[in-house]
Amino acid sequence: MKFRPSIALIAALAAVPALAQEPPVAFVGARIIPIDGPEIASGTLVVRGGRIVAVGDSASVRVPEGASRRDVSGKVILPGLVDTHSHIGSPEGADSSAPLQADVRVLDSIDVRSPDLQKAQAGGITTANVMPGSGHLLSGQTLYLRLRDAGSIDALTQRDASGRLRGGMKMANGTNPRRAAPFPGTRAKSAALAREQLVKAQEYREKVRAAGADATKLPARDLALEALVEVLDGKRVVHFHTHRHDDILTALRLAKEFGFRVVLQHVSDAWKVADAIAAAKAPASIIVIDSPGGKVETRDTHFRNGAALEKAGALVGFHTDDGITDSRLFLRSAGLAVRAGMSREKALRGLTLSGAEMLEMADRVGSLTAGKDADFVLLSGDPLSVYTKVLETWVEGKRVFDREDPRDRLYAVGGYGAGREGHGLAERIEDEGLEMGF
Image (spheres, one colour):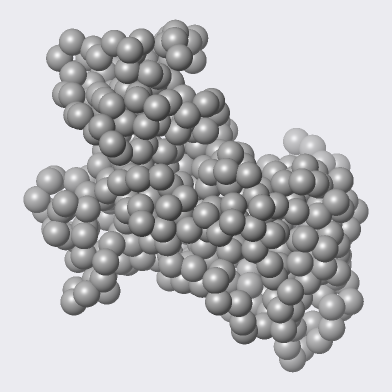
């Protein structure tokens, strides 16, 4: 594999003034799985200034002069894992006052010093879509986090080109949101209430447009409807919790009716309606659990969901729904999916680049590509092997998990102190002078 610097790489280097001072780090001899290209049996990955500078076979990638060289022969390097549906940091969303609360921002409730985040790093997760729960038809705005080591939520958030915080909107149907009024008692009423709120958002948008530059004609500001207008305008994707085959089709019907973009989450019955999901061009983020149970609507979930969706041509990703699946075991999701017939290529893509595409962050993460952020995982062996361990996790060129560090190893294997909030993070902030992020 020949290495050729790209225009994107040159632009990336020019955009990082710190490159002049920060020496590069070269990881040499590893088996590299870049995701957007063929696996490299013995490769070199060079990172500098938080970005990937070069990646390719060791014979063709030149290690820059002055680089810190690490021999990682016998190890595997994979892009940082992207969890498209997580609840790390104990996020809280909407309350019991109403079934749809689009104004709620999970930003205001995530504890970044929770041990959940260190455990996710121990599982190789570098990017996570943190969401409120599914006990509402609409429980609030989600947040896409980069799992850096920092003391405040602001240091983990991302912004898009317009400066807006990256995140989606959480919606749900099926069993979870059904309870006593004002919540819906049936599936049909669930859809009716969602439609009612979306129609209000359409009307609110028209009033704003009609007012133009005349502030006196603007409607009273409504934070919930403002957020839903972002959904209608395609600025905010809907992450739709849905399990049963008919609920999946209802979610697709609502998306088509109101023209919003959707990522289907869970889709336990995906294998029953895979062709419909693919035809709607709806990405599907699946959860792979080895001990099904709990809700009746999930009784037909199957390991072959990934294979069925892949065969139908749908974009497939994975998620933990942590703590439904422990973040430390995320790699296992792809292994179980492959065992049930999914291809190795698409399963590994589902852990990385496909998830990045669902979060609209593929320009930054998801593959080992020159110019992208240096988010990657160093593994002891093949990512689909049950015996493989995450050795190191890197976010933007900084190591956030090291299995050789007793403080980090504690989060990987458990034991006394592993549940202490901010325990390892607090020590690293003190010992290594990490940014607090205030």
